[in-house]
Image (cartoon, rainbow over all chains, first blue to last red; front, side):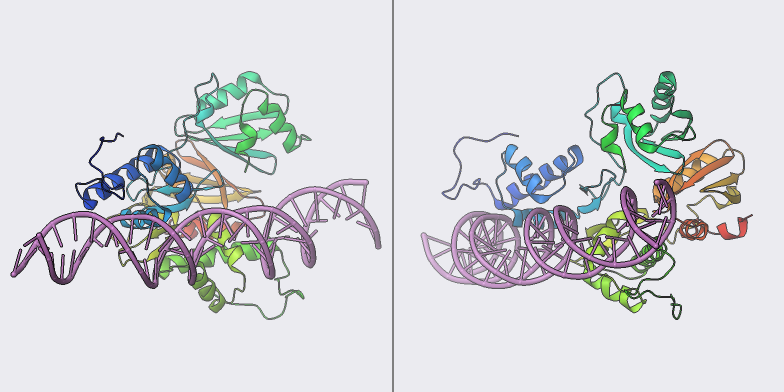
Length: 177
Length: 177
DNA sequence: ATTCAAGATGCAAATTTATTCATTTTAAAC
DNA sequence: GTTTAAAATGAATAAATTTGCATCTTGAAT
């Protein structure tokens, strides 16, 4: 975003119209929410500031209400604002390593198994990484499109499995449910 | 909903297990939210009370998080809680046709797993329906061509799973082996 | 039987979000 | 140019939601 020199009122508002700036702001909010993962209004407030829009949490609350932006729990254990349109779980894109970290969503145990959730299409590549390392603790894996079932060897504990996998799956522990 | 006479501990808990009553409560919450228009956790607390479930707002907050229930502004100018499946702006009336009922052949349990048989080619679409609803009781699914393996969360009973799935898989109970 | 760890939960505190009230700005009507 | 009603907004406050911590229950292990 950008600013024009001059053309501001004493209070700092842009001189064209409140409606104008409001609409701009709403659009930027939409943009920010669909791009970033925003967990609170204060967070959003900071992002808006960086875009050159200075406002308060009160206004933000009203804006979000106007935009029908919902706040919902996300898979990471936190919360995220979502636009009324996209209900998909878009996620952070911190990846870029050899290991498809970015595809990894969560891992949770049940009995002697673990279910690993991935972004759609990532299951097979991640499973094959696991297989290629062939950790002693892992009996085998089966991958669908976005889910991997991992069977652990008898007598092996959950931390054992986590530790073994962590050796080549950075950030895994943070995904543990 | 209903209560059994007796069988309660001094603190008022149902004597079987905390997990049991929690799962029950989660189901009732789901039901209440999809039936009524709930605008706050306190409101939901009262509804729960009427159903015979006594708890606190704190627990409710955690429950809603577990169920991935979102709070979103509604047209009336207020707010409403919505189940993850209703996050979609579905324009299709009562639903039910969205689910590929015809593809479902059978469901049978073994341990903490269920094997769901489908008509050839239907496994993935049905599994993705299950995934998109993301029932609390289900850890994950993996689909082949005509078979789905479903892993249930630890501490969750078979009826719990069946009930959770039945909410969006009409006729499921008739397919139980 | 005793010990221990994991879950579930209530209470109270912390945090986050919504709303009330007063003020400012705008656009329209005159 | 004034006047005026409506819209926008901030500050403060109220209301709602989340979380840290302590406790209790349960099932597993010793």
